[in-house]
Length: 334
Ligand code: ADP
View 1 (cartoon, protein in one colour):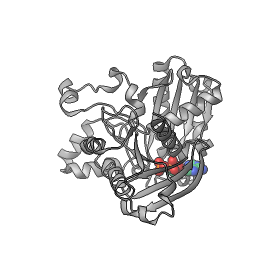
View 2: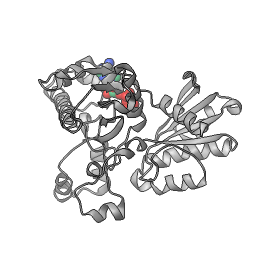
View 3: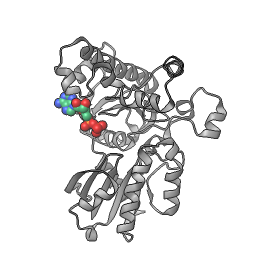
């Protein structure tokens, strides 16, 4: 069976064609400009059985993957205010492919769905409760396909059943998130209402005191848009040392570059520490994403702690597209 996976982002589109269930990649391409860029794919869709789409935000409604129909599209649209950059780009990919290939089944796989198992004390913020009820303000969590893939791989390596596996997964790429997985279920995760919360990322600040935003508005007269850009695009490693590429930063010798790495590593350690307490038993810490998979220096720096070093750690290359292809297979079997 041939399964096409589409990850349609705001500036590019990642495409992979899998032979399933073998998982062999038959064709892959990164296209600049999503949506209509699909035209440039050298793929004969006549023998594609199903198309899987990555969708970033599934709100509270989607706790698993679904076959796409008009109603699903309207629901994804309704979550645009929660993910104004991502969901419109994901929808554009869906729109173009549905129009071109109306007969091929298409499946939406949500980044948020893996975290549908979070308990209320993990996902409710300490704001007036009506903010949750009226405006859906809560922790959603992201990178779900990656954390889910890492869980299954880690369970296999550890020789455990998924439902008996307790791990802390670290997806460390340009975007980065940690997940505490208890008995095979996401029990807490560092990204929150949006993918801005949590770890120090390439250009996103992660956790900060929310009062800083009010201060910036008062002191600099920043608009909402300016603050959005500052926190998402000009902060994190880039804001700290002028570069967001960890390879370059590790090679640099200036004070700010060293500090940027130290801040990033400390934040990861703080999350590991708090997740160790939540999980009580931890089978392994899993490093993944471009930084986690490739940088032994970062792995060592994170593990260099009297408490953390007692835990086993694994390095696993993540594969979100393969996870999405597997989800399509599951939906098709239903
Ligand atoms: P994205 O979130 O965009 O998919 P990636 O998972 O590809 O990002 O991760 C990108 C990050 O991985 C960059 O900061 C890059 O510097 C870092 N990275 C890639 N290879 C290495 C390496 N060998 N050592 C350290 N960092 C690396």
